[in-house]
Image (cartoon, rainbow, N blue to C red; front, side, top):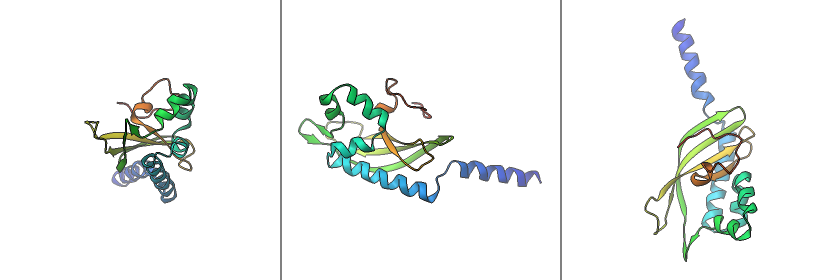
Length: 149
């Protein structure tokens, strides 16, 4: 009986940290759109797929800061994202965060991998993205930050 109870608790833990097929599908579509918008330097779509708190923060700093932040150019060179790899997931109520390691092809950066966070505040119906740098900026207000450095 104790083994059965332990098995059931283990199953609940495993499945409480996963997404349904529908949530996963929505996330994958949004992630693909985000990467495409970034790689094509489509500032409006890239900003639209970024977390609203990030967009508000950079909007408040003025047009040039907003455009600079939501541009994939470093000098004359474009930077592209590729190969997102799922790393970890945490949730608190309807708030879900997924951490990815994603690669950048930038000739000027030594560390070509960094973390990208997918965040849903409505149980996986809508997903927005936030870069590693912005995720840990305290002046960008997020309801939760489930991951630490």
